[in-house]
Image (cartoon, rainbow, N blue to C red; front, side):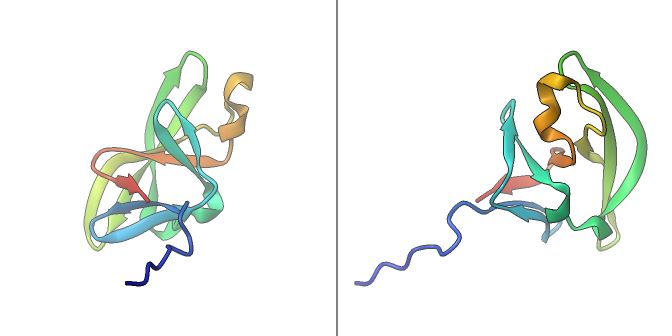
Length: 104
């Protein structure tokens, strides 16, 4: 029996509604969340949200809702446009939740 190795073993994917929303081998994990580089996110699925929240050490978060094949998932992605110094590594990165599957 021949074993075939995954040619891209460290690729993380964010999927929702049977679509890959983001895919990267350069995610940053913070508090068990994979943050994807913005250039790895399919922006056609992201729509701006007016929602914001504040993290004491990361700063002010902004959100996107997902719009995939006619279905919406409100505030399912977030990012820190101007993170505090302690979280500067996640500037220009996007994370997901609310039913978005993030896995290899």
